[in-house]
Length: 115
Image (tube, rainbow, N blue to C red; front, side, top):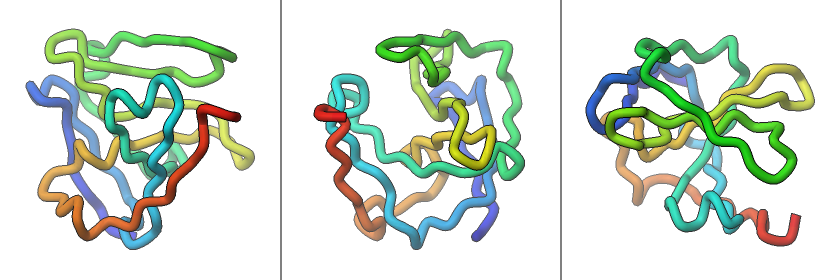
């Protein structure tokens, strides 16, 4: 685990997350994640803090259990919120973490299309 900083494109929404980027990141093929190219890592909400949340708006679809949050200004979805089996969780779009080398990440395909 290490502390990382990330943001949306315009930096109106910024965050810090204690995250293990040596663990595989999820590459989901659902109708929402695949076209946006998300690479996701889920962390307990207690390991995540954000600034500028007043600049977020949300989108719900399917079961409407996940808060898909995106910046009102630039449209980037840096993270989402939901409930995991152990409580509140944050799905971090690791592409929005500063200084990430995407080629160093291990990707774990997830068949969200069939889920």
